[in-house]
Image (cartoon, rainbow, N blue to C red; front, side, top):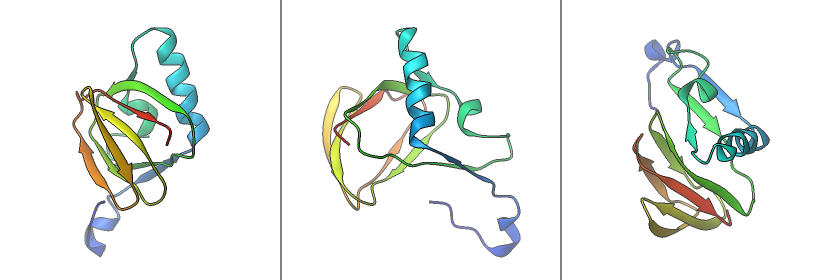
Length: 109
């Protein structure tokens, strides 16, 4: 979550990424047997500070890393998040930070 005053608001750009776009990125990268989500696929420019990616119910989102950091807010539902080979049950109200080189996946979210 980014907090900013009105003076900084003009410098914040948000891009919304639909669940089907994320699934397509995952399928393409999984074919190569290495899934690394890239900043260019989520952020329109270097000036964009925030990208929002909604997650809808699905069985699995394959293990992956990023070349950017991720802040996850679970605002409804629950599931299993595996971070660096350690499983965590996640549920509404959870907030967690994923470092760029952390590997993680989601199961039954």
